[in-house]
Length: 330
Image (cartoon, rainbow, N blue to C red; front, side, top):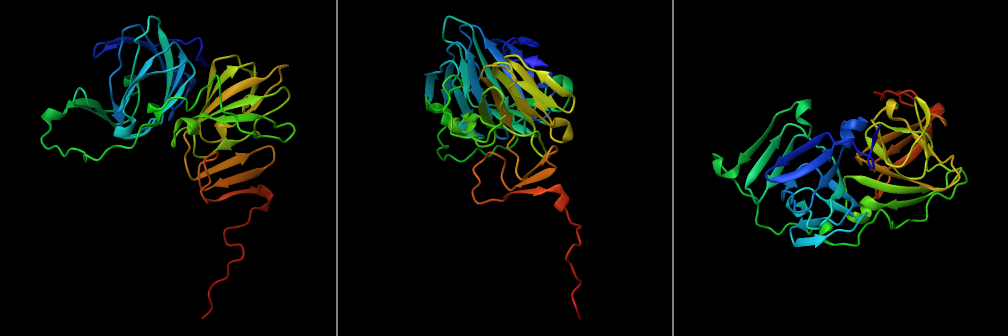
């Protein structure tokens, strides 16, 4: 198990003149399709301005006051601020440290494949077979646009405004909780930080759980991978291997399928908070082993329904494929 607050840095390097340390927490926790890296920037370092065509990203500031560049300029971030970067030119971004102290921030990514990344200042294109660490293989090349045999530039239309350009959208320390989870035994408060920050393809929800409560039943998803970060308190986690108690900063990955079944419960005497990040894949099918039911969703669970299907069925009501069918007559 990896920890976001006491990270194991497995990458320390200088790239394009930027010195940094990185803990690839998603890989360490066992994620396959969700990316999560903790970056540490010393004072005076500036990241490379870029955007992705395939992957949406989310940033969470853990410590310090990094500065963020978006298509409309620079602004300073606050500790705990959550910022979203959509696909395409409107999500272009770079993070720098213009302060006197080391800064740390988390980056979540869809890890879509294949991926094309654009570095406008350097006029470089990154072509990647998949978003992955080099030791995991896969073709990757960074190419100068000037060397292209044929180049069709993107339209000159103004890209949509980057949601991260505006501050005060979402904050981990001061979340905008909604009134949810009133059922006894499952009472909780939920702040949809991803949606508040402007994310559409990555879900990020902060759950606050009182003693003796769980935010949701034991379940697993057929389509979406998810990961959990224990933000505060000592929540307990149930998986197919049994129960375990988490400490602050613990990161756990939940792959799609039965091996990713999970439930969080607060067995301590004080409130606990967990951050759940999801791929938001649609359509989705969820299974609930304790109650032997299945949920069917036309949109990703937790996303705005927008008129799509959401229904739950007891598995005992299952019928054969040919149930009620008769052949057409002459």
